[in-house]
Length: 410
Image (cartoon, rainbow, N blue to C red; front, top):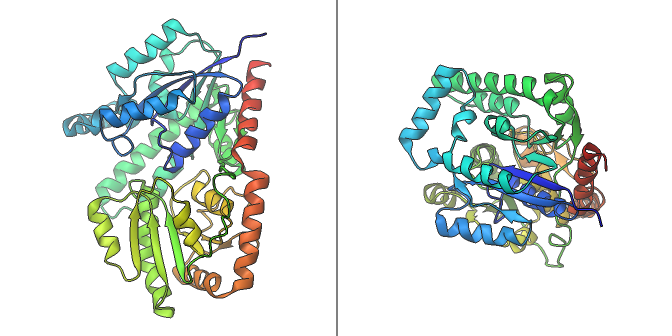
């Protein structure tokens, strides 16, 4: 029997537990690659995902049952040192390099990566982000594929537009220009650029002519997330997403400040649940809003999702595709989203989703879903159908394995 190809998988986050968008995708891509490849994972870890050594080791132990090998995770140095973070930003300003070149510099990571390469020769390297560009010279001469969870330069520009302080806005735009230069220069040199949607593929090819792209969308576990027969709570709205993610934080602030007062003004009995990690300060502030309860991180969010009659996705910043929509669709939930929030998905307004962008229109759509049983039933039915037909992780896994097989000539 022929040996299985080996993939070296470099990740900017240790993807366990898979309780947020990027971690969810990374974890499931690892699972799907391991079906036909032997995967060696070398990853950084983040404080917001694994707070201490015990949490890192627990995550590593869990991932050992998913892939062939998991190196000791490396904490991101500047998350543990304010002076290091300042130094990284200063070096970026002076050198002309993107900030991530310094953010992901770690002697410990270098040691672990080199140890893996001494004992295992990969047939293909998977970079889970272009943030790993500083490590390209360390890699063997094999095909390299890079995942773009969004088009990062565009995401930085969108964030910059919403910053009030001119100095921060200018610095964010500076970083966006440097990341765009990286995308333009490096993406055509890679064997494959994996993007989340046709929209992102077009953007990347326009930015980096000659870049080879493959669309491998986000997915959902349609067996885990499925309608469970629980009757939803009248007037219940849900938002899913941890607010340490800037797009989610912006969406929650937009929701509470500009949309929720209009919904409550029209219907005093409505209630909302915020599902996902919040800092204690933010959680107290959100809980103080009329009708709002911040549930924080839930190991199993299905009961909270099942109770909702409408899931709202007021995302204003972002690319890629929203796992929060895919999970809600798999649960057979009616969703109201901005155009950016559902960009790149098989979203058909009025059929499997309602797409609105202004606070008045979003509020009106949420109320329509809560009040119109026939509309809600149609959205729920078509949502589940879309999730199972197009976004089950098994189908997504087949797409990325086929793309990697083609690179390797299998």
